[in-house]
Length: 299
Image (cartoon, rainbow, N blue to C red; front, side):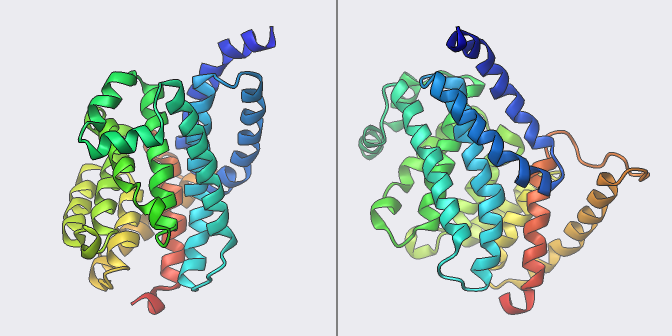
């Protein structure tokens, strides 16, 4: 009976998880998300094969690693802290997300090895089309599985066995983004821009192409500040381009000022963040604050 009840309630948990995208207070996300993930893992232990719970956990652990662990790691990175606990926690949480992702794939008769093989043969897209349903739950599960894998690669570039799986991660992104190009209000554009800008030319990247993609994405998604923050993190800082960094400073400072007013009761600017952008913008502004702190050292 408990399992049956959870079967009926699992889609509700999945739908409710989308509400976190509207949360504008970074501290609320940081303090609330971890406990919710532990609760969801407990619920999933009752129904281990429930796809809605699995998809929610993939998305949740990727979200926590990206929003919290990697944001704190950014500070350690600029301080050249080699043994960063925040980097380790990001790797742990992305790894947990990827394990749930592998379970989701397995329920659809897919494995990472099978994806690698089909990618080498140029048949990855057809394999995914043949085995996956085209619905919101599946798109989320596959996109965030791809993000977990890509992020583990980015955080462990010295491990070539993991780096070699980057084409699989991109293939999963491609599958979702070709079918849902507007997925999560700019998530696809952030990935493709960062994918080009964040890799040196010797590894197949094209920073200048990445810059152009970022500039196009900023016009396309003016309300998503994470596009601008990613531009600074993956292009301006690595390329030591202080001019492009400065081009975003006034915009982000003004956005932060407006957000503080929005979070405070009694402000005239009661609503400035559009639906679905709260979490992205809170992450972006928190990271921008860290970047400003180290600006003199970075340029």
